[in-house]
Amino acid sequence: MSSPAEENTGMELVLNMNTVPTVQDARQIVEQAPEEDRYTLQLKLGIYMLEKRDENEEAISIWYDYVIQSGVWKRERTEADFRDEWERARSIRDRHQRNLAYIEAMYQKAVSKCGVEHTQDLFVLIRTKTIAESVSKLLTLDASFEELRRGINHELGDLKRAAGSLCTEELRPSQFKTLGLALGPHGWLVERHRPPSPDIESVDQDCGNEQRDHGENARDHSENAQNERAVDKSPTPSTPPSIPLTPLSTGARKAKSQRRRKKGNAPYDRYRRAPIPRHPPSTFNNSCGCVIASTLLQRFRSPTTDDRDEVYQQQEDEFNETGNVILPKLFGWLDGDISTVEGIDVLSQFDIYDYHYSPAIAKPRLGWSRNMFQSLTQQLGRQDVCYYAAYVAVRPDYAWKLISFPYYTKSAYLGENTAFTYIDLNIGDYLATGRGGSAVQGSLSFTDKDKENCTIILPKIHLRLEE
Image 1 (tube, rainbow, N blue to C red):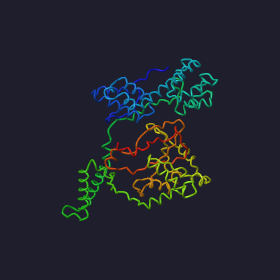
Image 2: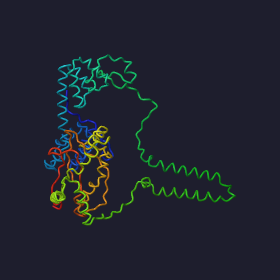
Image 3: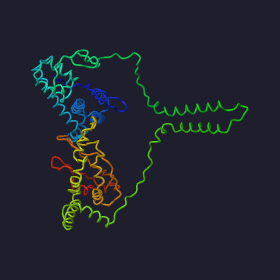
């Protein structure tokens, strides 16, 4: 059943204002380039594929195999560097091959039950491993192939729904023709072909300039019409023009000439931002730092002042040593004080937002709930004075004019790919100017962490940046 991946696999890429529709077209672009630029183009096109169509596993798989076989990378990269650069593409290629192997196994299983001809008709509908899994469920049903075909057509090609509840009743043409459907060559319901209307003509043309200048043309037309009306209403040539008309026409001509001189940038002037002045942050004195420390101490379990001081000192030493500190039970009141309040359940709010989350094809989820900005829990957390005080207390400059802005949450599914590494600091800029040296990054967690489910940090990194 399976065949080698074809190089006319569709893509949706734009390189230097030119559309690259297929993998074969991308190969031609690379092979026509100078040898010293070929690997750069291969890498650039590979990144575009990952960004634009992350779910198009076939195109990414073909491109990765082509890059390896070309051998161009050997002139510019070591094997270790190449593996690091193409790690994501390689993982997609490996997953794609596993999916193809699974689909092939389902194909052979279908052949043993339905025969080659019927299986070929069935696998016209199979494009992904997920759909192939539904085929596995269909094949376990005690039904003939024609009954399976009728059940799938009843669900309009949804194999999963057909496997859940197979309807084997005969479909009458009157039932599907009213929906604009017809039986295709393989016996599946498809959209009925309708010839295009001869009155409709499609012409590709660049309308960017027309769209950009549309407003200016409309203003000019309005001014010309206004001037014409002014001329029509003006007295006869023997009579001097009235005073109100002279500044009107003069002002219109000046405005028109000014817009013509500024043509090109004028449509975008309204979107430009004024420069924002940067002021050094105000700082706390030592007494203010002590006030914040005492505020934080009230949240610890230890009942006595001496015990609280000891706990805080240990955590302060830990932060100064490793650059990281954990404040347990700082938000314990969220579990105790609001657990009986109707409508506020911390973990259930994540489920609500996850239910309404619409994933983007070109952007992997990576465990982030990108639609959860303004939940009740987030608002309560940002209003907690101790949450604010903790950030001020650990900043080297004790800056207190801080802003809390909404950001999305982390809500990973079991087994979801969440691996990515980065440093939220421009190290070169920090070493040159010191900017960002007082920044503190933290998170509020509602679940326990373990070695397999946690954020990885680099202890003492703040002491070794200059190295």
